[in-house]
Length: 572
Ligand code: SF4
Ligand code: MSK
Image: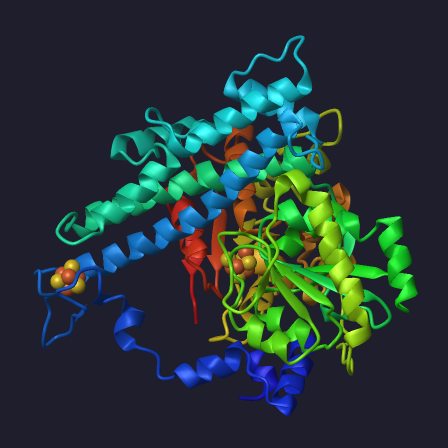
């Protein structure tokens, strides 16, 4: 397959060709080697959850050994996938909550509670007393309440109270309002084990409940606590695509999801002593760039450049210009090890729960976060001398990121009257025809980025405001769609007029996978602002995930569905 059939990103096409010329495999080559992929697995009708199986149901053998039919097997597989996605996001949230508490207690001295205004809002929401109390004392209590959401023995997820009353009533009526996050994940595994829940409707109902524990639980907590810890994103400029890698500097790629370490690596790269060290080895500076959602987190808060999305992770190493890649959790391909082995790139895992066989591990200890980051940056500097030939595809685009819920509200209404009113009014008067959340991954089964960017262009042309998260955001960024001056050229007259009046681009980069929770809060605000109906289900809002790969994307899709929103989902 030609590089341009594999990716619509010109930088990626160049790197794919480079790897082919050097005989180095990437995800597309491994996909070719896997073909034809299993048809039973694709339809979800293969069950291997007990030792009487694996059972593959077909016309010839329509039931598994236990008697389970196709509906049960498909529903169980789906529930397990959603639960795994929820576990991934929520474990991320739990890690953030632990660091948050440690920061508030002064045990993780390199982290501070930065956005104290947001902390106070959370405190009020959680019923934490604030009068006359020290900010860190409030932080400890807020963090401990957040941490309890994962394993509390009674009550429902606190954040579900943010949804419109009408939606809460629907959840209660159907018994799907989520309890403790861990409980919903555990119950998913129990229900889907052999001989338990064998009514597909009942199984799918629990898929909604566990997914809601993510959207209005684990992921939402992760976003809120990260905002307090690292600052709530505000629009700022950055650059996107492999052209951000600098031939004359030490380059470090941070990849994965949790900003706990990447924030520190970004800070350490500015350390005067380390910059001096870089000079000594002949480099003009230190560039830190991100891939995947770590990139979104850093772009949103610091304008740190983005080197690419999921399918770019192997390609950036093929530039020959990456001294070190530090990875934490989620969406990190094991294939990185063999690609890095062809170059001088030092690949290092940092999360104790996510090691790769044969890859060096440096344990991230939040009590010594900055020191750990400095060690990694120094390793990168020391590796600069080992560089061979460098081929950096010279493509990059300017982008504006940082559209948190708070920012959108502020920009729409202004500092004294921040509100969604102008958005509701412009939807009601027809200038804006609706809102679309374009989210999710990039899958080698389809031409990289093509579906996301084509859909976004078509939507804004038809006056639909677009909000993006995850790798879809980076896909848009690579094609200039997060650059207001380029994106406005594609926008229809009504949308363009509103965007120019308010000062927002027609495509709003809203962050990483966990930040889809920002979209839920925004939808609730559309309802409470009035004029668009009193339920999430009635809103002119759609979510689309067209290049999905990860179980997290299924969890996101399902919590949007269970929140009453229309979702379009595809993986090829
Ligand atoms: Fe087969 Fe039933 Fe066991 Fe699944 S649970 S592997 S369908 S026997
Ligand atoms: S990184 S889950 S490939 S969006 Fe969040 Fe990208 Fe999907 Fe991973």
